[in-house]
Structure formats: structure tokens, C-alpha cells
Length: 132
View 1: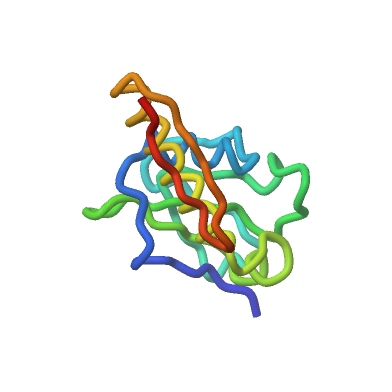
View 2: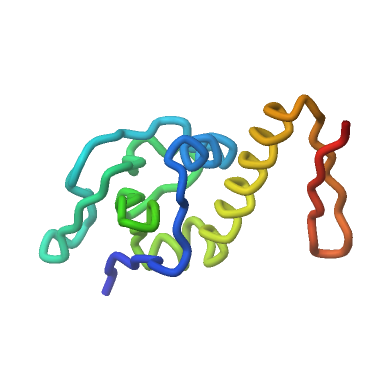
């Protein structure tokens, strides 16, 4: 049985950086609003979100449901169908999105400080620093 999962412990504080991270992940069409209904195959488990990627707009994955982000007091939290995480997006989708989010934050900081962003892979870790 499919159900929406909410990732309360992994929030995205800045909406603009989240949108940039989503675009970097290949999700450029995002609908913004307040308490917009998420479209999933199970209508009994209806959910809402403030940022939505409609499943029909995702070309490289055949998703079962929309991907949503609900605004909370700590930022935006992901609301994603568990079957999409298991079989379409990958269980590490939120982690990969967080990595893109942090990279977008670093790019913004580098631009603000007048430096350039330097990425270095050390094993499984990616080290990002600003070079002046």
C-alpha cells in the first residue's frame, strides 16, 4: 500500500534555495501556493503542500504521485510517496536534494563575497569551499 511520507527532521529553511536545488536535480517545473492538493493514486490518503512537482511534469521518472514540500515553522519538509522513493526516485532522494540545497547556499555565499566555489571529492565526501 502506498502512502505519503513526511521528512520532519530534514527541512529546507530557504524556499528560494530549495527551488534552486530542485532545478539542479532536474525538477524545474514547481507549482507554488498554500495547501495545494497533492495528486496520488490513493485518494483516501489525501495530502497538501505549498510547493509541488506534479508527477505529469517529471519526464525521467514515471511517478505514482506528486512530490510536495509543506512549509512549517522550521522550513519546508518533503512530502513524498513511499513507493516513489523505493522504486522511482531512490531512497536517498532527500539526501541528494539536501546536498544540492547546501551547494546552492554555498554558491549564493560565494557570489555575495565575490569568490568562486571550489568542489573537491574526498572519498564519499564532497568538500565545498569559497576561494578568493
